[in-house]
Length: 203
Image 1 (cartoon, rainbow, N blue to C red):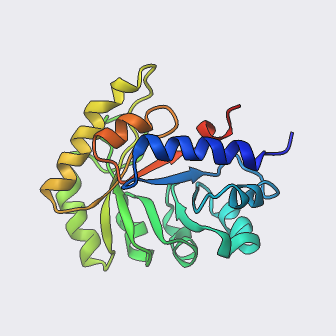
Image 2 (image 1 turned 180 degrees about the vertical axis):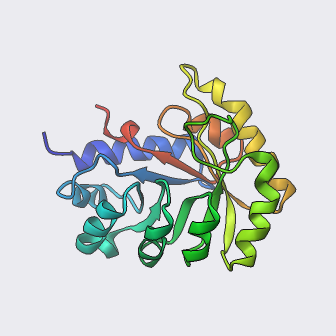
Image 3 (image 1 turned 30 degrees about the horizontal axis):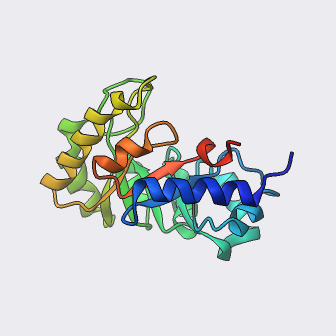
């Protein structure tokens, strides 16, 4: 079934109302087909985030002027130059090798849960990584995190609160945290960007 602009607009308005005017709602488009991207523009979506360079290139080639583009997937160093040319902001910087090749502004991903399966810099390594990234010329704007999966959105709150503390202590202003499951809690804890996908497509 084709994506409905009316449905997306209604859900987007609801999310924007819930998080308030100071929080940007980024629409995660990993599972949105190239054909349906135009429907998002029609629905009033202005900020999108892609996980894969290949999809970013294809969608940007067709609809480059329709959205502001961010990259929210794992950033591989060899793809950093190509990603940099297409996006306003990268949410997932966590390696020196990627920092060396990145020219777009970035958020440093922090692995607050210390899960081995997750990307991100450990909290105790954050200061040294920030110093190195800046020395390499990266414009670091803030931090991003992905908390452990939790059945209750409240389970994410301590991780969001800790990320805000880390950002505040370092004078960083952008906080990318919260997804369809827990974006309200993220906004309450100081998110400036929430990354919403499935929530916008629910009937």
